Each structure stands twice: as structure tokens, then as C-alpha cells.
Image 1: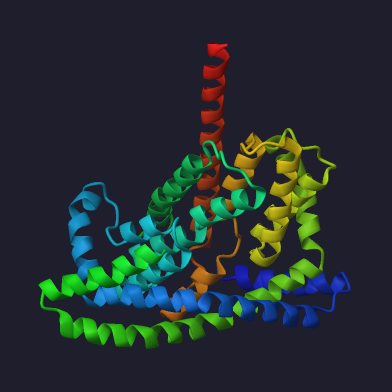
Image 2 (image 1 turned 90 degrees about the horizontal axis):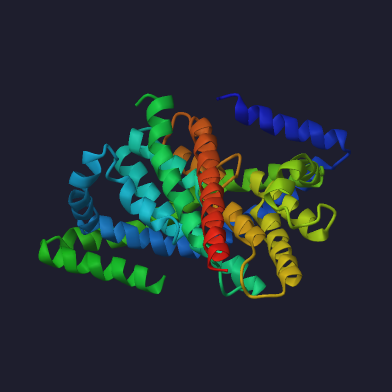
Length: 170
Length: 197
């Protein structure tokens, strides 16, 4: 797996050069867009990181985890993942804030840390996407879209635990 | 969103009040703001770098290339959209841009795709193709989870990308579950409506 990133980066540059693209200018153009994205997400991220930091400092987050622990443990599910999994379809930045909380608490290379990473990497902010696309097209009756999309999110949470457990053996 | 934010702040205060944790809370609020900015700065380098590399992919015509690759598969998922139509082209380019993690490019393509589907159907009820399309956009099919990797790295992960295989498998299974359930629901409701006729 450690070769994937260097290979992708090199392949992109070589492919671009073969296509006679000015890859340096392209990179700079893309980096500009990246900075714009960071600027765009920064205020929301800070707001929600403060909110989650507050929740954690007050001890309420741990209390919530204690509340869920018996149910989660009985089915072999990592407790700390529950709040994040619930928030993920509603708020991307909120879920990211909880994700950093998990990293801080248990470490990014722990079992929970990896599961949470996989959840974050394989799901989207479902409600946002549904609202944006149907809103833009003026669709009012969305039929079974939300049920199926949320079922996909639930599947992602279950499979994050399964794949990390089976493939990464921790 | 305002309610979630309010509930988080007010809930923390009430809980700290009841459990005599106000000094910790007070310190926590002040620390978390600084920590938030530090975190943003530490992940922004990696995010900006990936934006740069993915822009090379876009400028080299990889989006168009990928969309040609996916055309046969997408033709089966969107049977009522003509493969040579503009709507179909927008759909396949939206999916390709999402794979490459080019959100900035994917969103306008996706909006244009769904507007054209809407113009084709002429009603405010979502068509089967629209449902399929939105499900594909609510699942994350991004090949390289850059934000997650940047976050992991900033928290000292040894191999921020060691989750790649798990992410690919999980994304694929989740998307399949979403699309398959949509197919089953559609068939069930179609049977019901044909019986009532």
C-alpha cells in the first residue's frame, strides 16, 4: 500500500507531460482551488471543532459513550464510532470534528481510529447532497432516495468495522 | 445546523454544571479554538497538494477518458437516458470527477445532469434515473481519501494511507447496497401499482 501514493503522483505527472499539459501551471491552478476550498471550510470547521471540544471538555461526550457502550459492545461494535456515524450524513464538518476527537483519544492507528477513518472516507454528507441536487432541479417528490442513501451509509459503517477487523487484524 | 450547534454548547454547559466540571469546560472551550486553527493549518498543506495533482489529472483529459471507460456500465444504470445525450455525458463526467476527488468539477456537472433529467421528465417527481444519480452522489466513490489521510497524518499516523483497501471495499459495498435496495423498492412498488390496476 505504501507505493500507491508515489505511483499515482508520478503517473499523473508523466501522463500530463505525454498529453503536453503544462503540469506545473496546472498544479499551481489546482493549488489555488485547494486554498479556496480550505478557506471555504475553515469557519464551519472551527465552529464545530469548538463545539465538539466543548462537549468533550464537559465530559458529556464520555457520558454519552458510556450510555451507548453496553448496547454497542454486545454486538461487538466500537462505541466511540456511534456519535460520528450518526452525525456523518447530516454534517460533514461535524463528523470531521468528532473524527479528530477519536484520533486524539485513541490514536489514528487504533482499531476505532481506523474504522472511523474508513467511515469518513467511504460516506458523504447525504442530506446535503440530496437537498442540493433535488433543490436545484426543483424536484419535490424524492420517492425512496433518502432510504436507499441512508441504507448505503449504514452499510458503510458496518463494513468499516468488518474490513478493518478482517484485513488489518487489530 | 443551528440547533445541533446550540444543543452541543448548551448540553455541555448543563452537563458540566451538574457534574461540577465547569473549570475543565472553561479551559476546554478556550483551548479548542486554538487547536481547531492548528489542525486546519496542519491538514491544509496536504489538501492543497492533492488539489494541485488532481488538477493535472483534469487538465490531461482524464475525466473524459474515465467517463468513456464507464459508459457501458452507466448505460445499464440509466436505461432511459440516451447514451449520446448531453445529460448522459454530464452524468458520466460527474461520476469520473467524483472518483478523482474533484468536487469542484463534479458538482456543476452533476447539477447540469439533474436539471436536464428534470427537463426530460417534466414533473416534480424524481425519476428512477434521478434516484440512482443522487444515490451515487451521496455515496463517496473518491479513490484517494485525501482529507482523512491528512487528518490521520496530523495526528501522527505511521501510514495514513494504510486504510485504502478498506475504504475501497467499504465504498463499493455501500454503493451497491444503496443501488440494490433502490432497485428492490422500485420493483416492489411497481408490482403493487400493477396489481391495483
